[in-house]
Amino acid sequence: MASKQYLMIPGPTPVPPKVVAAMSMPVIGHRTDEFGRMYKRIIENLKKVFQTKNDIFILTNTGTGALETAIANTVSPGDKVLSLITGNFGERFAKIARAYGAEVIEVCFGYGKDVDLNILEKKLKEHPDIKVVLATQNETSTGVVNDIAGIGALVGKTPALLLVDGVSGVGAIEIKADLWGVDILCTASQKALMLPPGLAVISVNDKASRVVEENKSPRFYFSIPAFKKVYDKWNTAYTPAVSLFFGLEAALEMMLAEGLECVYARHAMLAQATRAAVRALGLKLMAEDHCASNALTSVWGPEGVGADELRSIIRKKYGVSFAGGQAEVKGKIFRIAHMGYCDKMDVITAISALEMALAQAGHSFQMGEGVKAAQEVFLGRV
Image (cartoon, rainbow, N blue to C red):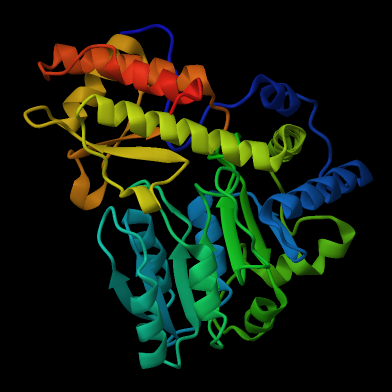
């Protein structure tokens, strides 16, 4: 077993030393003016990342908790919900809606595919009484990014709300919540925001707020109205994870110091290098180029070598962790994350480990070609 570990999975992702140091600060009272001032600074910076002027709430739970909060506050029993599914996490969003009594219309575009806007437009016309549309910005299970701007433009022509799962996308891939008509945007701390798990972040616009106030579903901890009551006081409805708030402020300061355009460009470069390396090794990418994510890359296991067998070699021999497939592609793909606190040499390390594991597994290829392809991207030669 390798002693040094490299985390190349889509959450939790590596946490920068500056963020670790911030989380090590002495805990303060969450009802103090000091906490309120920090909370205000965090919200102001989150609004820059979300590109929104709307209210943003921070809850102490996970990404799934963020999605359930969005559903619990907008879906009443019997409401018609359109779910746009491109992978396992799109399926989870639909399951949450169904748990709250929704009549869910699932449109499955297939693993490795993105949302077809023509089909969405047709479904919206067929069902003018749809109350909520569920979409995933970055489908973590397949490495597919969806056209949220296009989806928002179509949903915006209807009374329906657009709820977006941005859990693994926000911070790695640009999203313009207000301009693109996203009524509720959800994300979480442990992905591109470079924190440990434990915080959920949700933005809510005026259109969604009206629905929230009238919603009939029971809710307590996940109640947006409860958070709104104390929002102007820069407080939270219930006890927050104070140390994670310290870390979130530090992480956001890092992102804004780098510059959001530079953050997104870095993720795009890392994705380009990873995909070039995978192709050079003769492996097949899961997502098509037009919808391939900049946050992670999904790769089909090579013929004759199980994807999970390959991941096991990479982790045990070289200390590099890749994620496996989920649901219908479990055991068939592996996923290389390049989001958050990730840079060029992290990708070089990951590809080098992949090459050595492929050689040990008996896959036929030219050693060094993957690393070379990534280097060529980093040197600006392609």
